[in-house]
Length: 123
Ligand SMILES: [Zn+2]
Image (cartoon, rainbow, N blue to C red):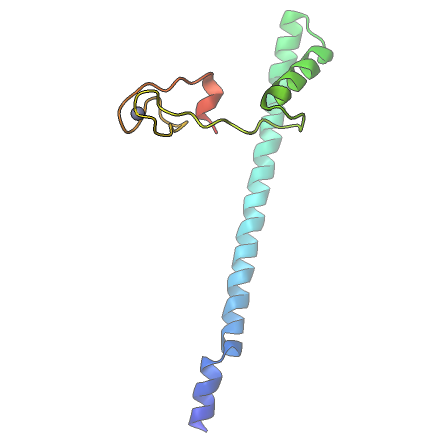
């Protein structure tokens, strides 16, 4: 009888409730994270709209100007897909190693990174 009890505790079935609890916690964490990201997107959309309305009013622009600019930026990576992607890997001109976007200089030799604009450090 004790042997059967030991076997039941070692079997994969005895692990099932713990696995289910762990899966429930991960699902809850993911759900919370999604809500936070949705709130971030909503806030960024609000800020972008406010910025656009300020710029449009102060410079006499139209929505068509914004749409043309969005299309131009979208096409910079060669694909009209509604997003900026395909950042090219930059190599240090001094040592040849891969440069990090988060560092203004090569972390190996101190060589200068040639970032194109302020957004290069964000992603
Ligand atoms: Zn380097």
